[in-house]
Length: 538
Image (cartoon, rainbow, N blue to C red):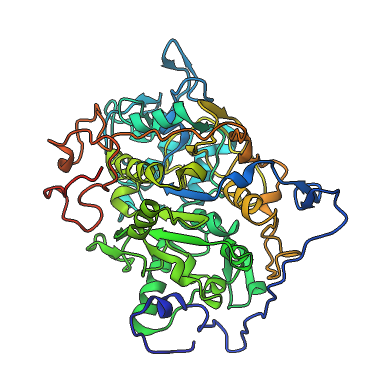
């Protein structure tokens, strides 16, 4: 390993893999900025798509700003299993007709309405994804919880679970579902914009590979900084390995991680398309010491690469000197207010706003609502598209068998909504989708259909397929009506009514705060949980 001094700047922290190598002979591939397009397509088409030639959806360029808000660890049925018109929980006369065997009680437990704001969820690494699906029977959720309940060390470890029982004694809350009584704003967005009921996580695994796919359409383990040294892996690092490697870099200047394959920012940079990755201050997942049962919260901010902030570890981001585009969330709010949002934005939450168990759902909904209110109040609203989704299923029950697209996925079904002045009103999107569809939309809108394709992107890596061109993948442009006049904003309260008996204390005594853009107190460094809220911003 090469070694260098640490001076505390993001540039050096983000240059982890550019200056490090796992073998003395490793070299960095020199790549060209020329993006290659295959000729001989019909007039008006571009290279790409399952057939090799592709027509860019007409009207898509009306969208000048794509904002991806990624929350954490909820299945579609956990949030929208009883939403009218969806492929939700099978019911007859309001009573579920499906159940999941409980190995502890030897009964078959049905889904139940969970009114609690704080949930436990279940384990959600690759083995448990396979166990939950159980060959298509979708009946392994309770068994997975019980298998790991006694070994839990951290709620953020995908092989761990903060066990919480609800409904009736002995039924883990992985069988619980929420309604408009707990998540009214999410149901309102679904009613007024677009709800996708066939959105699947891109891999049958947990948050790290999901977030890698979100920015690169792949997850891999690389031997060094050469993109061709990367090998397909949906469990490239454990939670602790990833955080420990980042901690080692900050403390000693050495690390073992090279995220050397090509990510979306490579295409954006070489097409002169602006982007930003915004990280909320707060705490990051898990303990660096894998022997510790508990640990003090580890601060998270834009300077700390990690599971929810992987871009600074990508070598193309470092080599293109684009690490400055990883920014604090406050910058996004400032840019929204001034009408200076970049073309592409990714937003990553802190733990307390993420809805990742045991995080508060109400808190997460308030955070998301504040972000959407800020975008709707922005001069950029009339040309924006918001893709709101959850990264993985978090161990919660879902009744739909994930389709197979390749060896890596898809994974479990997750909630997703498309919110835009051009989004169809109250439309149910039944296309098969994943976060690959977000990248496909960006590439069609801003990159003339260019793909993360080793044959054409000018920076080849050995990824097994071009996910954006998969024949099964739907097109998010179908969720829009670009012929309609831009719809006006629909501002919502950040503290709507809820039937949950366990809401965070800082919401008590507060009004609904219609259209507010202030993020929840206790989650952004403004004060500890329960402290006096700051003035609410309209």
